[in-house]
Length: 404
Figure (cartoon, rainbow, N blue to C red):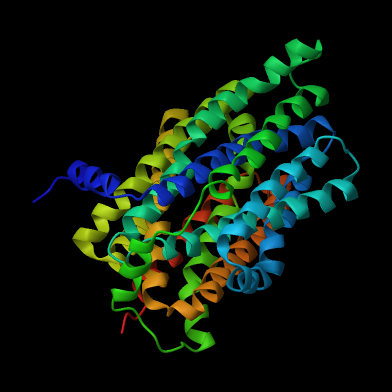
């Protein structure tokens, strides 16, 4: 029986040039996102805002997907995923170019909403774009590789991102936590967001082999009722809740609870990103062994056990739980996406992907707002408890999907 390493190596060797272009986009876009995730909350703090404002901004950012996810799905079906991915990537860079020159709350909120629209546009378009250039047999592996490309680059983004304010401060002659330093550091997000569009914009063409392979697979052709699509998206809603209560505040968690510096927080998030990137590569071998549904569900349940470790008052144990949480989630969500694509007819995939995005964004945005308010009075213990419960329910929601 082939080893996990052999399975991964075989999957990599079979990837087409067009898939590599999409993976290159995800690498650059993930790098931009990881730097933004690390530094934007610190930027808000430098402007005089607190955790409640950070929660509000996270709610607005993800709320864009909840409000516009379905229209975005229709646009993808109408104009194709490739061009809308390009628009989303460039729009993300432009939005951060505007964010670094404003400070008023209402202006920040408006531009954060636009950044959220661009982000969800790019992320939603990736799934149908990859589905259209891969066969059903290779899809779980390719989805896992795409998730890994977007996540493992966070190792670089968080490590370098943590050092950028200090470098910017030295260039400008200001303090490392000065607003000007964070603004210059965040300009890197602008360049990376725009650059991520280039691999898909220039020289990209659909693979005829992949198109033939897709049409030859035995995939559902009868349209599904709306309730079935909503049921497929339920795990994403719960996943969004589990992530939204904690992840927008992960940098503030490590800074406030363990008194870590910006660079140390960046290193911690980098280790977490490495765990997520490696975890995403393990999903395909797990699916080959257990099947898509069981593998996705059991890996998602692993995140529950990992979050339980984060209640410990000892930093190494908390970091171990943080890394394992990311690895289990990163391994499970590409498999859940592939499962939904497998069970959905081609003519409804845009709607299915948009529902995944809408419910995930809705769960994330509401949870982030509630969490930001909760932290002011109660700290992070109830936040971690809510995340643990949401991940457990999400695992059950995947396990109970009917595959007939």
